[in-house]
Image (tube, rainbow, N blue to C red; front, side):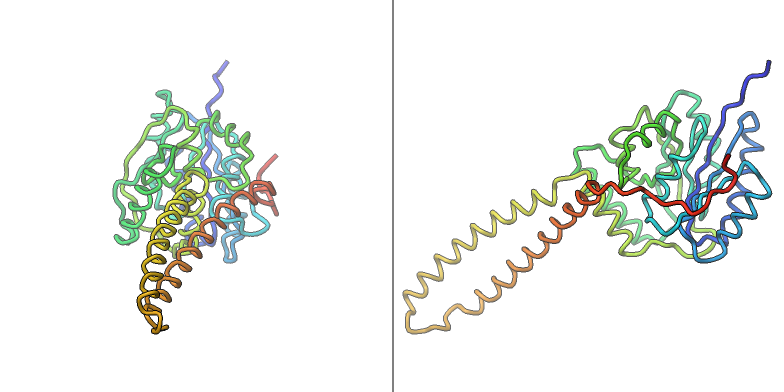
Length: 315
């Protein structure tokens, strides 16, 4: 009696990737057949409500290969919810998360699987360099350093989620039922025995990146409010310092007023500047506090990660 093959799941999130979905599916199938023929496989695309031809191409791909599945979301549920939900829908003994734009090298799939067979529950792809914009890469480096130093969790630098996850970890993701998941934080906080594989991130094969200032800021705020107290602590410390200096300045200007009681304009300019400065600080930290409140609000409401519009090639 032949032994049942282990199954490898490859989860590929996509949004407006009409130029990449067909090539990435062909590249993944090719490397699985050539490098890992002893394994069964499934490829799961989760589309975050694309507005180009991506969905039509996915339907065509799935019709040609029943091992390729697709979930089409009813609307765009953001850069974190959709991939996380896709991971939870896989059925393999391990799952590899892979970007659709070829910035996650498909050549590392066999490397990840071989490390997994050695006993590692998680194999993380770590960017040591990138062919993307150098300034953007520098900003990412600064961000990773900040969040790692400020968090009580040992956050992983230059880890985007690209990697392999054992089915036990996938089950953990399902059990968490986190309405605003941050996979990088979950791996750092709850991850099992982990192996890091370094690689250089290539440029996108085609199309334009969907990351912008807002999406990058959203990612930063989610990590800060989920895994650090630094915003609230900083607000408290700055408040104490400003209150102390305000008290000292108040005493100084009170004395000055007594000495120049007939000059009502004495010292007004510094007072006005100080008032605007302190008001600006207050607004910044009110905004930071609002980020924490929004984080709590989303968790309390506990809405579903995504709403599906269509499933293809699922039993």
